[in-house]
Amino acid sequence: MPTTTPFSESLVAEVVDEHGVDPDRLSDALASIHADLADGGDAIQRHYDDEYDQPWQTTDDGLAIVLFIGMDVWTQLADRLDLSDELCDAARATHTAFARAVMDEALPDEEPLVMPSPRVASLVRAGLSPRQAQVQVLRDAGRSQEAIADELGLDLGTVKTHCYRIDRKVRDAQALLDAVGGDA
Image 1 (tube, one colour):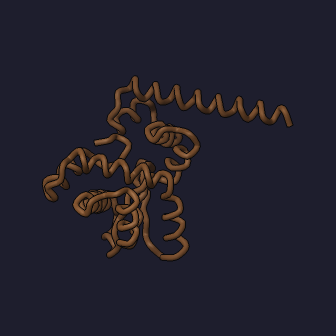
Image 2 (tube, one colour; image 1 turned 120 degrees about the vertical axis):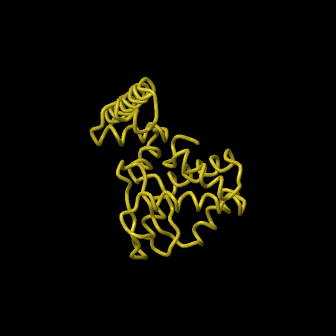
């Protein structure tokens, strides 16, 4: 399972068993959906915030949100990503199972969609990798590198490398801003 999605391997395995789909194809589809939503999920969330009184919930770790959408959004997503009906149904089942696990209340009638949180998505759009964005959100929440490693299922050395690269990107961006501002 691609590690940048919030879905556990056991959750995906349950859906694979229930739907009889290839686990690698489902994992790839879930990763494609999640990456696509990192780019365009804010628009979906704004639309539903503006147009509907739909509940949505941020996961405890701040890495994802669960939004409840109409089936038409799932259909558009499947068409845009060229997902078969079989894979789309399995992906929807994965999102539904995840929503049941994290929601404090009963699920509404609409379909759940698990998206990167707005903070993760904005960090990805600003130039961090999806994993770096997750690490930074957890750093911002005050988690230690050890806690981040445990939560994301990474080696401590990998987390340290992500932190180093994030800090380097921030320094490089600041140097660019200083250089551009110095010429003004």
